[in-house]
Image (tube, rainbow, N blue to C red):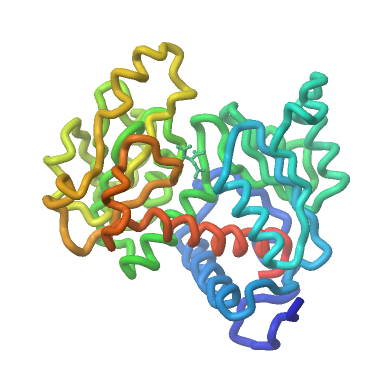
Length: 325
Ligand code: NCD
């Protein structure tokens, strides 16, 4: 494996006094704007390093436990890829039903176990607050990879990084969040994170899937201009970032209610004729019905590039909490 070039301009090295060393990443509320600038700078360097050498040994010998109680493709595999590209290794526990969880083991005990074997724990769990609970029992850093309908901070960081890399800046943009704003944890985290910038946010959703009022109030207190709509046409022409989300089927108690809203909005080349030429369409993925595959080849479709940015942001976060950035 290539060793890291001795380049004084790269923000890498042993930095155990660094502010993120040993810290948990539980919510976007932990971050300041300066933190984001720093994370983006490290993520940008990670991108350059991956393009240049692919894999390097910044986290050689370190072990990540990937503990997933809910399905995941991107988050789990991008954390694995991030750790391995940095020379570390991974204990994958993606199928908790084959672990002692099936025997009735509690989250604190499972976390205490992985704490003995790993240097960092990535957790996805269906309950809000689960990552904070895990962090209470772990001495090692815990990274929240989605706690039910609560937060998904690493996704919001990679979303903001995507906007920055694609459009060059975040201040001054109009961001439209579309779809399931009630149950979608990615939009909960992203709205909070964007409140560190001077943005205007439009929420477009079916009546029953509106953004939770406590989040709207939180952003209002920070002076963010926000509007709510049910029709995308009202805001699409002025949108710089259209953030599309999946209707979160697994959170609905009544399947008939899900059926009634599942294809409330579908992004097609026809719909996108009303949008700017210089703007981007994002989606945390997986998509189901909400973006037609016919739109994938449009240069404004940024959702596949967004996945790749996720790798660099997660590499940056791992390096930071393990004291190497
Ligand atoms: C999202 C999630 O798990 O919240 N997926 C992801 O992490 N990229 C979005 C979703 O499942 O709809």
